Amino acid sequence: MKRTSKDSRCKLPDNTALKQQQLPAYQLQLSATGVLSGFFATGVFCLGVGIILILSAKSIKEIEIKYTEICGNCAKLREDATNFDKECTCSIPFYLSETMQGNVYMYYKLYGFYQNLYHYILSRSNSQLVGTDLKDVGNCAPFSKSHDGTPIAPCGAIANSIFNDTIILSYNLNSSIPIKVPMLRSGITWWTDKYVKFQNPSSINLSSAFAGTTKPPSWAKPVYELDEEDPGNNGFLNDDFIVWMRTAAFPTFKKLYRRLNRIQYFTEGLPAGNYSFNITYSSSLFLGLAYTVTGAVTWLASFSMMAVHLLLKDRKMLFIQQ
Image (cartoon, rainbow, N blue to C red; front, top):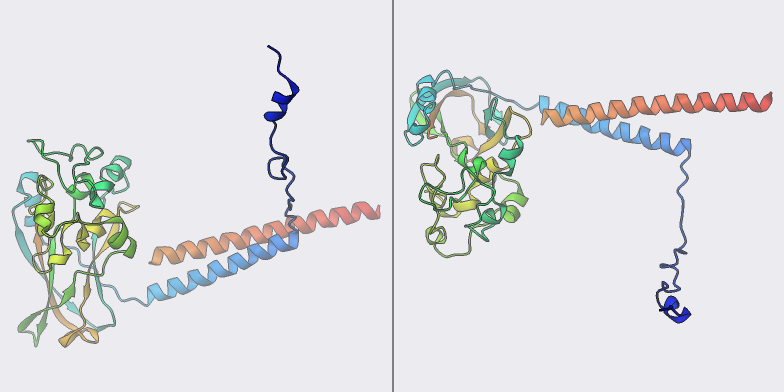
């Protein structure tokens, strides 16, 4: 069967500028002066930001207390995974020589904990964490279901390995009266995590919303009982849980644990004096350096390109004169 010219014309694209590829186009022509100016400006910006960040980081007062060896008996107890629900408490006294004025933040720091492993990062259920489907545990093995087949909420290796030490800071007023330093456990997460990436299931009673699920095997409490003092800080919206679920890029990392509530004796910050940490085992300098290095490398590239440009320009002028 022969095709007619009419059938062939029907399959042709429309005679429009878009379909005939006749739209006006602009080809960007960069000059050496424009490129070098852009590189120099980028280098100046990165160096400036890097220096500001480094100076601000150096002005921050920081005190680091390692309690692994001091609380060795508790650490030894926790080496046996079957003791995950056994509590062990130890106290660490220390002296603060000068007042920490302004906002004070408490972090916990872990060494040699690889949160950046590929299978570890994938071991979570995003549909479960936004409260849409608590039974979706497909990517959480081997922490997807209990031995009797009940879905785990929250499931996965990240949730199961949550940092669950309890740290209480006390201030010894007049070297005799211990005062519990008021620390806030809210407002320590990223806004997008708290209000976008994590949501509780829609229900008036949170415990009934998690009916039909069970807690992770290494947890002492279900997810809806993480904070006994603040009912709104439970479930997938618990701040400590959200902070832990944001995985770290390096094996040694710090995560925000608490922030100082500036009331009573602590309106100006953390006063100098004697303190003690009561630890219960229950189970931005880098950014400044990155900006500085980026700015320095950009400047080196700018000078290198400028040298090459001037060299080629001189050769071209010499060739024209000959």
